[in-house]
Structure formats: structure tokens, C-alpha cells
Image (cartoon, rainbow, N blue to C red; front, side):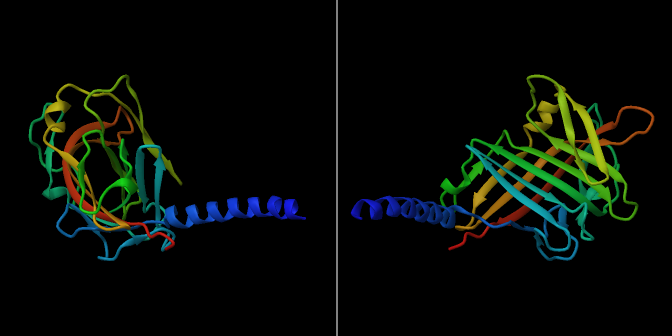
Length: 239
């Protein structure tokens, strides 16, 4: 009888331990807020919450990497992007007027960090992450058409590859290389991650991105745009 109790007790202890670990480390869907002083701001001033009004927001932790995604493609909500207040350059790095209007866009935004363990960060700790990858698709909220796809990656790639997205009725991919002149722009920008509290992080982006505009007859037209925005990401634990 004593042996039977031990056999029954061991699985129960294991289940309790796994439940405790899940409760401590599980984080719910993120809530996202854009700072009002950036070039990308909320359409209503309210945060974006996963599952509310069709908003899709997710985080993923893989080893020492962290990624974040926000999609408004299937939501009536949008983000206001101040393109006409941003700096623009052509492929020769010559300053040019804005190629897109400042208006509401349904965005699909991803940010990826390597060698970052967010739960190991101290409150108040700030990390500048040169290798951060930022991609943003801009869907015109009025016309419902893709207006542009912006990308920040490392200035040197081991080999060309595809970058883009496929979400719902929208699919857009480009062959990405790392032109030498991108290095000069890359060095000007930054992407930083700060832990504000136990459940909250701030991502500060001020960087040049290559932006591709669809062209039905030829390859997508490529420009550069400098976007700065700050977003607060809150992921609550169960306790």
C-alpha cells in the first residue's frame, strides 16, 4: 500500500511542478500602445489588444531570441503613419519628397531580436540591438491596397533571400539584398528594448528602412524612409 501511494504521489508532484512553472512563466496575449510623439501612432489613442476588434498581436520566445508581431489587416482599426514628416531618400541616397501620404494604414508589423532573453532583463535595463530586424507592411485603410513594404535588416546578408508577408488576401515578397550604400543609413539608426516593469517592455525604433512600393509592370520600386516610433508592449503573467 505504501508503494502504491508513492507511485501515485510522484505523478501528482510532477504535474504540480509543471503547473507552477506554467503559472509563473506564462504570459497572456500582448497589449500594444504607440507613443503619441512618434511617426506611427494609434488611430484612436487606444491600445491594440489581441482578439479585440480583429487585432492580431503575438510574441514568440525561441531560445535567446524574441519576436513580436502586430497585424491590423483583418481589423477595422488602423495606425496613423506620418510619412510626410519623415525623411526620404532614393537609391542614390539623395533626399526626395515623401512617396506616401500621411494617413491611416492597416499595418502588419514584426520586430525580431536575437540573443535577447526578455524575462532575464532587469527592470530599467536598456538594450540596444543592432541586429534587430523590423518589417512593416502598409495597407491603405481607404483603398484597401498595399501601399508599401518597409524592411530593416543587417547591412550585410550571407546571401539574397525573400522577405515579405502573406496574410489573408494580401501577399507581397521581394528579393532582398544588402546594397553597400545601406551601411551609411544603417549606422544612423537604432532599435532599443527597455524593461519598464515586470510585465511591460518598451521598444524604441528610430531607423532607416528600405521601402518597396508595388509596381505591376516591373520590380517593386525601392526607396529609403526614416521612421521613428515607440511602442509599449504589456504581457501579463497569471500571478
